[in-house]
Length: 326
Ligand code: AHR
Image 1 (cartoon, rainbow, N blue to C red):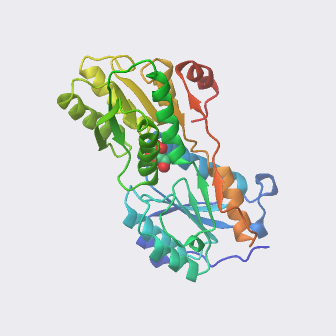
Image 2 (cartoon, rainbow, N blue to C red):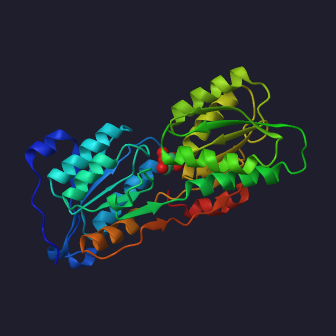
C-alpha cells in the first residue's frame, strides 16, 4: 500500500548514531509486509525517568504496530537532533518524529524535510515556528496548564496564611517548552496573591544531579524557604537529598511540588516527601504510531493532539502506585 522508501545510505548512517529496530511485520503485530512504514525518531536524550519511559513507550509501540523505527538519542543537544533529522531525510524514511530539545531554531531543517516531502510529527514538546506547515501534528501535554495546576494547589494550600510564602523554583532545560511553559503557568496563577514570592529560580536541567546541586546553593543562600516548585520529579528527588543533608524534612520544613508522576516521584509523594505532583504522561508511543501511519498514507490528522493528565496528592499516589506503568 505504502510506497517503500529506499534503504539507508552508508554515509548517513556514519553521520549520526541511529539504532534501528524493525517491528514484527506479521499480521498479529498490527502491521503487514506491504504497508510497513519507517519512522525516524530523534529523541532528546535520557535526562530523566520520564524520558526513559517515553523512549520505552515509543520503541515498544513501534514493535507492536509493525513499524520500523530508526531511533537517535541527541544527548540533550539540538545540533545532534538536527544531524539526526538530516540523516533521516537522506535515508528517505516515511515519517520523521522528534521531541525538540529547545523551542527555537528548527525552521531550516524542517524546511529541508518539507522539500523532501517527508512529513514531520512533533511529540512531547512544541517549537516556536510561525510556519505551521512545517509539521503535520503535535502530540503532547499542555505545559502551561501543568504549571497552572501546580500554582492552584499552592494557592489552595496557603489560603489561610497571610504571611509571605517564599518559593524556590528548579527550572527545566533553558529554552525547552516544558521549562518555559511550566514557569509561565505557575507564575500567572501565583501572581494573583502578592504573598507568594519566588526568591530564587534556576535551571536544574531536568536532572537529579543538577536538582540536588542547585538546591544545595538555594539552601546556603536562603534560610527561609517554604516551598520548592521543581519542573520535574527528577529535580525534586535530587533536591530532597539536599534538603535531608541540610538536616531538614522534605514535605514538612519545605513543601515540594513537582511535575511528571513517574514511579520514583510517586513513591516520594506517597511517603510525604513530596506534597503534590502534576502528571505529565510519557506514554505517547501508541498515538504516535497511529498518527504516523495516517500521515504516511496521506490522510489528514489533527494538528494538535492533547495528552490527558491528572494530579496526585499523597493519598492518591498510594492508591495509584500498584498499577503505575512508569
Ligand atoms: O518534555 C517533558 C519533560 O522532559 C519532562 O517533564 C521531563 O522530566 C523531561 O525531561
